[in-house]
Image 1 (cartoon, chains in turn green, cyan):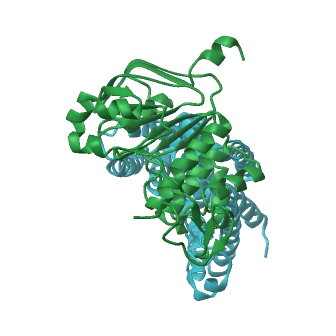
Image 2 (cartoon, rainbow over the protein chains, first blue to last red):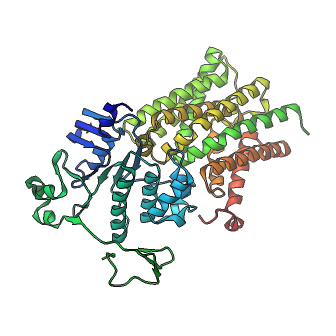
Image 3 (tube, rainbow over the protein chains, first blue to last red):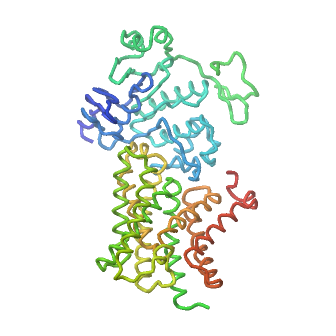
Length: 268
Length: 268
């Protein structure tokens, strides 16, 4: 790899916009994601978050501006909507290898990390919404991507799982050194690890650290003061996991029948 | 009693069933049965063109089917007309155009029924050569594009984002379908080609736990239908094309019997 390629961001949008069905879905978007960086897109429904991500990934060609990806970029993508037709028999194991070959240890480790190692041989149609979301997440991680793109990765996942997944995202970043582009419709919860938040509303409304964005005037205009105040910056202690058989594993490795009040964060 | 024409018919039918298995699975997974119908109906126009230009029928049918496939491919990219209505329009227009054109060609003596329902007992050596040559070509190409095609079937955006080229893969698949239509017209006729694609695949769905096994099982069922249908038509003097389809349908009904409930993968 040449030095210029190394210095190039993973993806780079310059003044990018998409015109479709007689309207602009997004316009004038500037966005870069560097290796090791977590960038979160927030914005109301229809503000063009998914569209922006799709332009960045080369799924849509921009009508205006440019979209560039680093040559040879390896992407792990969790799309917002994905339904698998019942007529297609597909086990979780096969889903994992959908877009390319995968080493068995990588595959198993990824499923373990998202908490569904026991579902390896299950048909995907039998999974609950949250389990399926985790399987998609595991698939994206197990590819060892340079860029991990998550379009609302916590949908269908319960609150405790949501916190665990956000924690996992940070862990993955630290471990793989990959860039992460995250879409969250949940303006109340943008995690502490996010390096930059971009607030979209058809155009780029504002961007900066989570704190800076929450104090931004335009952001407050868009979401209202209450929403802005409610935006939680996540610091939490996730110290126990629920095992598939209903028992609880604690951070020190011990296993008990139930979780206790003195345990850390739990679905509330 | 195995007359030579009967052996040729068996071989031809088996050759077509072998490609119908995996292609039919994709038709079912992608919900493209109507698309298959449209291509098959346009085959009649191919016959007309072949008769007018004294081309080999198979080549004429392939060219017209491929043309229609490409037309549909590009029309479907424009969401102005729902693809269901579009297919309905094209499917029956193509069939009607073919019937009208054939009726005008009074100087050519052809039996319309042979085109509509197949004429497998008249298969000659050159037909066999064309069928097996095409079948091998289809299987080799399908083998090469299998993984990307499966990924594109599950989700086009995902395939595109993760570095595959679903547009190209889908286009190749369309051409393979046109080729399949061309060689199966003589076996079951334009009206029943879709049945040969869809029924064995639908039966296989209940018996398979992965996409690859489903394709193999569909192939086996297709071959069994051809053999059973042809022997039945010899025994009871029933029309051979429809007999093959009836045999496939009987196997589908059998797969619904509760015995299957205790078999492998019957949880679904």
